[in-house]
Length: 81
Image 1 (cartoon, rainbow, N blue to C red):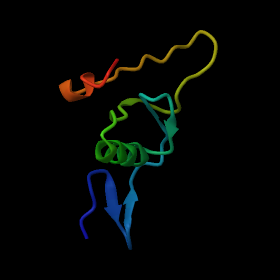
Image 2: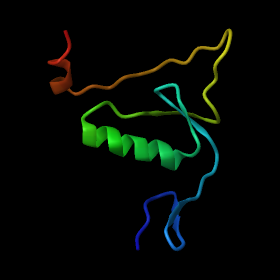
Image 3: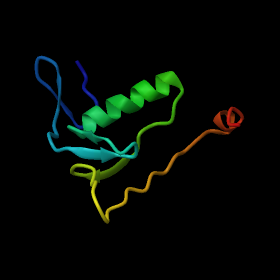
Image 4: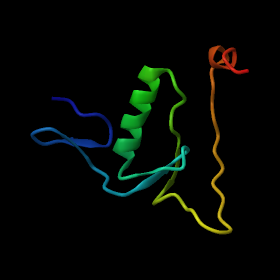
C-alpha cells in the first residue's frame, strides 16, 4: 500500500507527526495529517479548506489574535449575499 507524504506504512498508514497544529478555522488538530484529512472532507463538500497556521496549539486568550485568511474560488463568490 502507498501512504501519502508524511505518513509511514505499517499495517495501515500512520502519521509520522504527533505534534498538534493550528488551522485557519481556529481549531487545534492533533497532527498535520488530521488537518489534511479535514481539507479532503472540505474539498469534497465544496467548502473552503483549512489552512495550516502554525505548529502547536492555536493560541487563545487575552492579547493574542488569530488572523484567518479565507480563500474562495470565483464560483463561491457568486453565492454570497
